[in-house]
Amino acid sequence: MANVNQEDINRLELSVDLATQAGLLIMKFLSSNSYSVNYKSDHTPVTDADLAAETYLRDRLASLCPNDSIRGEELDIKAGNSGYTWHIDPIDGTKSFIHKVPLFGTLIGLEYAGTPVAGVINMPALSELVYAATGYGAWWSNTISHGKVVEANVAKVSSTSSLKKSTISTTDVESIALYPPIQTLVNKAKLARAWGDCYGHYLVATGRIDAMLDPFTMQSWDCAALLPIIKEAGGKFTNIDGEETINGGSAISSNGMIHQEILNILKDIPRI
Image (cartoon, rainbow, N blue to C red):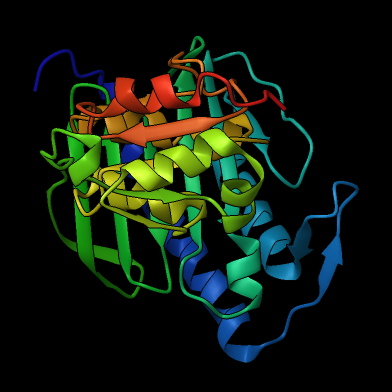
């Protein structure tokens, strides 16, 4: 492991623990069916579970890393002066959560001085997670017990070398129908599915699919965990303009080998 920053690793270990604990909280809401659903100004849903999980994560981070900044999907920005910024999406895939489909996850990303350095994706309903830090590698566990990682193995992207042999995912079926470049991408792949939200990127990081496309409305809390995980797993993460950023409004995760081919197809897609 080269160029590993111990401060990053300490915070990564903390984020893994907090993500799994938040997952337990979320699953209590899901199993008891004791949550209400409201809609934000952008017409996306938010539940009591989203708010409770983000509040838990913020409170713990504010206590343990008081000088770090925090940005989250549901609550206001907390300013800090350490150079570190946490990006939190308590339930990425709230629609799946509402429908009791187990493909939602908790995202915690860590940025230092503007550079994403660590992240975790916890899939609490599947008892799986993947996590990574710069120089530390990416690690995947499907053995989580009582909120603790029992065993983790190296996470690695696939080795599929051409789009025509690939399995890809898009965030929803509507974008396929509405935007011809996405339809072209789907037609050129061997298999296309709509395993949406963080789950599609999770599948890329663990080598089970070859690319995931989120073409619109991606925020820093959607992307900050994904970028270091995909890179450390050997893949590539950019927006649809090919920029390696968590603030580009879109996201493509891939194994790296088919990334440019995907970008070429999507070059004429509208930027929203």
